Length: 197
Image (cartoon, rainbow, N blue to C red):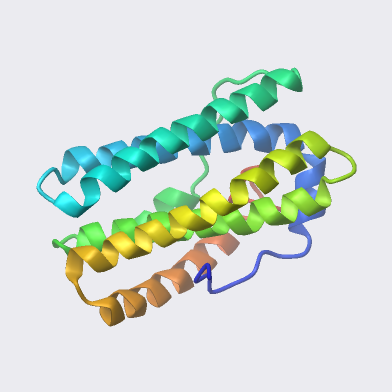
């Protein structure tokens, strides 16, 4: 279960098919950023023991996904380079509390929601691109289980930090509503977490 408060618009998949190479560049940056976020949490919270090994493993896996995205871009002869960051993740994280452990819990849950939305969108893209870009569809199908597992990992880590499953579920539902609003507000940008206006 992905704990999302909204579904991606049916218009997103055909739109994504029209911008596939640009979205792949953005997606590669997303995978690199996911690895960086995991490492950043390790540096920021070295005393939170339950985070250390799971986030180290996650960072390695995300770098592997980044490398797979680079391989796909190379195979498609699409150059990888700078691409302007979307506002989605930054806007979502603006809602994080500033006190601890609230800040950590909210950061973990926001990361979990980003993974959930990525999973949902990769599934839609895989279906939409099955005939026109089978290489992309195949990679996205391969990544689905990982994205769903990453979502679950972040929720589990948040629960481990506070030891209160119900409180985490309540906060996750609140942040999922924020995520749905942010996603609608950033429409009109060519990003994995953007889409048609």
